[in-house]
Image (cartoon, rainbow, N blue to C red; front, side, top):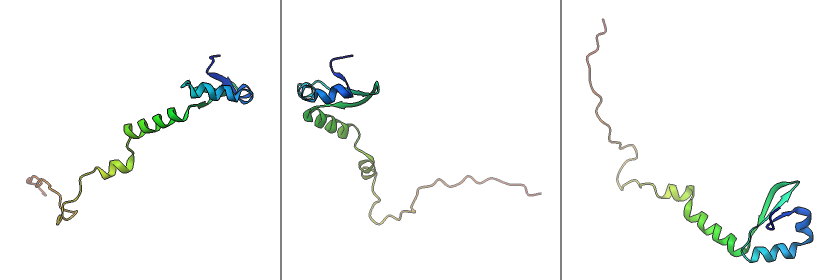
Length: 92
């Protein structure tokens, strides 16, 4: 087991040590029943992750706001369409 990985029971009993390590910039991984459960980070590391997540993925609302706007006086049904090609049809 890595020094930055804790069993839940050990994390409970040595919480101050766990927090000190996180404050030194070392993410602390906690397992529950032998499976990864949570990671404890310093507030500074968490805020940095939050900022980078917002920069990398601006979100759905920002995507919609970036779409081209309808021009003034333009009807939403005004669409440039190519004229359909006409062809002779034999109905006999």
